[in-house]
Length: 296
Image (cartoon, rainbow, N blue to C red):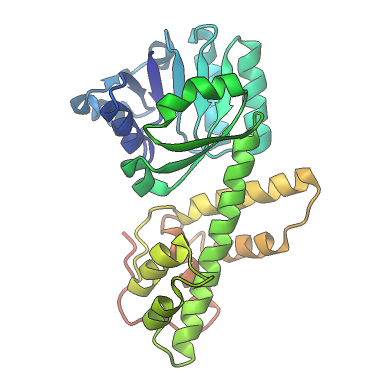
């Protein structure tokens, strides 16, 4: 099987390393070729031309910034793609965009799965990503053994459904980050030790990965990016677009979106746990902890 991986960024680089460690031969391409070339030492085959990267591919995996970029790449690559190839887009896009990619590739004789992920850079490095796939069962069955090197893949419905699942994930993540920030700031403002409060409620019904990982980040004021504020805002907008298309109103999601938008020009590349900074901005004189902010 020839695997072609397109997009060597924060997530793509460790994902390629996981595929290589699992014994796969991987051709890598990136718009800035130096990022792809850096993986040659790990055993990848870097290629500068997109057409060359996808020619002869059995499986194409893309991990790109957003839907428009994915669309541009599909249009550019399609003439060189072999008939019957399977394109797995692991980027976070809108449901309608994923459905459009499916139709575009199908017309060119190429199959498609949308398979966005959750778990961040740490999950990519450890091979523990949650992978939410949308597409045909037979196509998922072909891709699943490869995706197993990256994490746990689940087929959640037809094309576009993977993006819906990812948006549901990001909805919960974004809202929980803001609620954890509120809980910790309240604890300190009301005279309790916020670190002790976090420890006390862990293991109860309030326990979550967000409380575990990002609650600690907030206490340490560590906003060095894993998932960035600008990416969270993109996800929130995609959630609201999906809600509009489905005819439902999501009032809490609208509020969470506003909270992140309030810091998008100041902290666009900060970790999304910077929800705490947005909260402190509307609570003058209130600040969690005494340490300096770590932003990069």
